[in-house]
Image 1 (cartoon, rainbow, N blue to C red):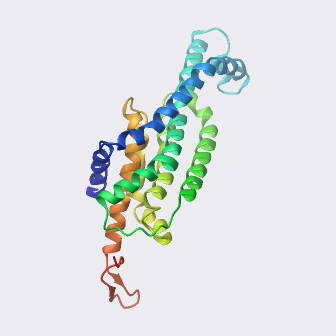
Image 2: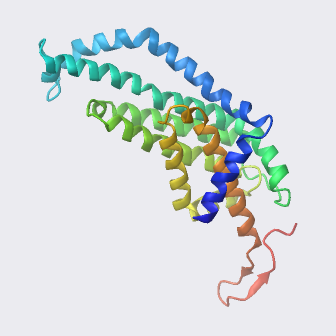
Image 3: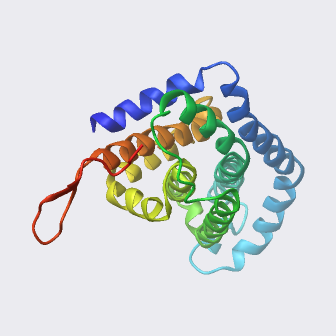
Length: 258
């Protein structure tokens, strides 16, 4: 837990360094402008279409039928749900931009400044980062679409947003944080060994995505926290002595000869 808290603090410090904040903030601002503009243009029409289509559905259709107070409340809930639906879309778009464009550049700065002793073994690549992030975003979109009926349940949309955002954080940032410094084996092994801590860190980012103002910084801060946690974990892993599986005897002083 101490290493997790240390990574969170280091991410906050890195975020405030000169030249770092803007490079990590523009993806969120761009994504927010894009989706809020679409929301302002089309949510009214989409809500009107849904009010006409939903009364024919089983279970929830009765909520929207007629002109009763319940029908008006259900219509208002529908509009609120559509606006809330923009939150995961904004977050996913910002994270995709951050993971594939901004974060790799920032990793170079963080690595050179705070982890200069850590050898770069290049187990990942920019193309691998893009492919991983795109695949995770498509899964995110599919799960979000499947969850849409649940958004009519008060509070369900917020829980779904946190969980889906956390999964997206975990998949994208774990790859990006290690792609320059880890070799191919370490790129798979280290995130697996620290799965519990990474899941908690990803969940923290998912919760921050729902907090006004903080959600502007959530993708950047969470990405940097993954970088600090995993690079420090990689440093510790390489410093552990290698031992023979059969005898338990030490084979080398360091995993990293540098």
